[in-house]
Length: 314
Image (cartoon, rainbow, N blue to C red; front, top):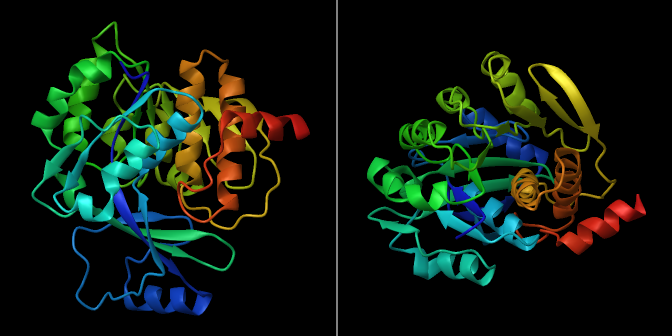
């Protein structure tokens, strides 16, 4: 039995180093091109959207969060789908090598999901996701994973797989006394409102853009909101009332890609370890900050010793 289960996206990241001029040109040509810090999803890229990637890495919010949870000691399983091309990119091998249980990951007749990650000179990113196999995560697949999800201590969710099967899963979990704690990362925020309305969701972890976009839905959310704010203090609130804040450590960021995923994965791992919410958020905040010191969504994921050392130094 895995203590943490992540149900979500598994991607191959194509990383593009971009100047401000490059990004302005993309924004002028494509009205949907994301702003700084945003992730957008598009089913099919236009033919004239051509980029030369500097490198290819493993990613996907679901997979990144699973790796982060393992890194700090939580037994973790990944649920989701990859394409039949996954071997060419070493997608499952990378997850397995990181210690993630990949036995329940499905294979679809679609390419493995792709994310174009544009990183600017300050390390901030803009991400364009083409779902590919992630879009084939349907109700039959999710239904078959119910026992694994129910028997876990924490379920990590994001919004890079179809909403309907996840909403159905949450409806079933709401009436199950054995259900896990559910942590929802509402990224990207478009279309995530039905999940926020599910009573089985215990924690929601938006960044500043997502928080603003989901303001009305969050007003009716009964769980705990953990607001990720980049280098600013993380704000933890419930029913519109601030519970506490956590100051992140000062770092020199190289690449912010995946920092929020690291925070989520570590938050889940520390909650199932039995620490208090305040300590879990503090550890997760440190982890998210430390992860920005290296390029790539997974390369800088810290260990629990790294986190404790940094907290002790501050």
